[in-house]
Length: 322
Ligand code: NDP
Image (cartoon, rainbow, N blue to C red; front, side, top):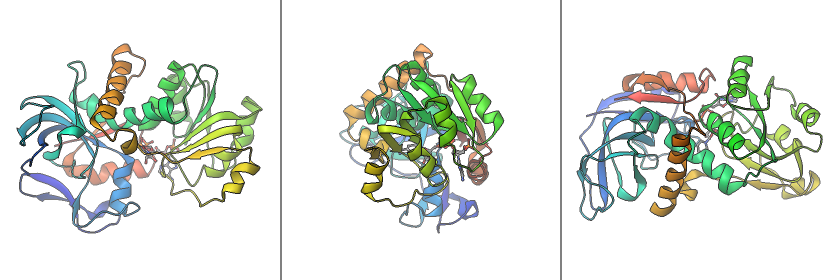
């Protein structure tokens, strides 16, 4: 079968479409025949080596498809089930992949493969960030960076549904308009300068929480946008990792809380995964969260998807077709 493999870390050019043996599920594993593969920013960290992988390696964490082989002891699935997954082992950029039976979820009939691959990882991330990490309540002020991106679009819609006042940021006027169209109350176009005075023009006390997946470029402005006892939720590094900081800085800036969460801890058991996915699927079913049709690339063009994502050319989700 065909799969994207890397022999070394580096730019998109290290990604090669390769013929590899089809994997067979071991005990408690299932094989998923992919219909649509999700592209996530974390895949670029795995490729570049910001997050190191044992090499050579596949890439990709997320796909939707049909279970076509089952290992001994699997009780959650049967052959023919429509499923999606978004966890390791890496290797989802392929025609089929083997994952633990506890790491996949069944798809409701209303969720097609494209929407599943476009939303499972990003939507479950938005859900735990808003409902578990900093629990958004009506009237809270939240600042959401990269609001027109994959995770950002879900964050904006879900935060509004929870009753928050949303200040969105984006890298262009068109992306800011997208964020407003999703319900953001304010949208700032970032120009590389300090945006915290603009946030404080909108809410002078500062925001209750910042959801920051951009990292290095927004770090200082994010801390300066928080009110005392506010929470900095640093969940990604799209512009590079944030700097190291002294805990004392958090005290000086207003007894701030800082967390650096990852989805995989919030969905570590099958029960947590099912609960998180069910909440996402119900947000999709109710219309609280809408997923725009994803931008599609052929599996063979996965490197171009990475180029576009890293060049900030994309909005919403990207998917690959095997
Ligand atoms: P996005 O679609 O949001 O793409 C990243 C966006 O970041 C860009 O579109 C761009 O938006 C913004 N950005 C700002 N500066 C840069 C830069 N220098 N280079 C590239 N992008 C930049 O990606 P995802 O939705 O897949 O992921 C968003 C973030 O969430 C990532 O950091 C990812 O690692 C993180 N994440 C974390 C998870 C967790 O559990 N911790 C789980 C899932 C994702 P703009 O041009 O508008 O600024």
